[in-house]
Image 1 (cartoon, rainbow, N blue to C red):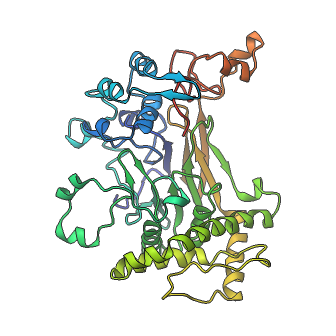
Image 2 (image 1 turned 45 degrees about the horizontal axis):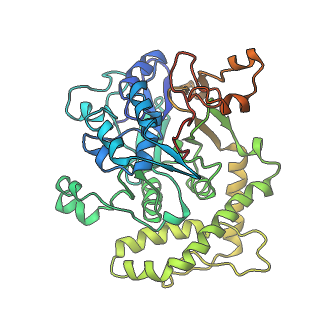
Length: 428
């Protein structure tokens, strides 16, 4: 995405989540909210004609439950394939794949083939933000917006696990790229964050960002809930974080001062995150070091990530040893000055860093509107459906009665599936 000067005196940044392959909606919303730029986090829906046969059955059912491109009749047929068997639910996986084969679960390939295209004015192109790619948008003649992000879910157990790599992708990778290429971690239909990606992300941001820029970090999980991502955003001096979560009915906007009782409580999330990471690192360190011992590039990326998290001060460590987060041949001292500097950075973020958490695009969105040096905030949401209260029902009664898959007020009242996980669809 090339830097561009928006000449009409302001820039409108539309923030969305969970498009799930419904790319045509991007153009509609760009026009509706007069967007100059669209920022998206969550499931974009990168599925092609062969994805149905590759994606794990549980995630395939998740796609069915929430895809805006599948009709209600098909969803009902798939729901009928599952039968309760005592404490378990039996699934006819092959029948599920047969029903979905040939069905469009994403519009991505329409755009890849050139049959459709993204907007000409509001969205001139599509930039995939990852650990090696950032974007800069010129807000005015003196100020730029710096966008960075790291995709996938966050699981401590998978931070050192690269998953499976689709060999079909090899034909798209040149010999030069293969030498420096670290495949996306995950398996068909699912991606997650690894320490190698975090290391590359840190290097990319440090090499491409400027102190004078307004900086936004995008992620799927909310940094306010995940201590490692929260520390990453503080360490890289982000002004904003934008993320999303399932089952949210409104976009939310907050800083840590507004939700934490005190500063010490805020710091506990970082200490707890480090403790979890340390317990895993002790178990995998020897194996990982053997894997990277002849790979200088991987050593560098891993050391960068570990060093970042090694800076987290440990709280209440009097009765336990502090486990260093470092390769055995690259340990360093974490002195009191380092700890003091990190605490100062935490305190600044505690008051000044702002978090935005998005709901699904079918439920709502938000706009960051920049003009004359100020970034304004606008939220749009379908809202909570309280019509069930007219008959005196309570939320719990409404759920138990199996009333539509709208879940906690997510239904639109017009037969749409909304945001719940009714029937046999598992929660993620």
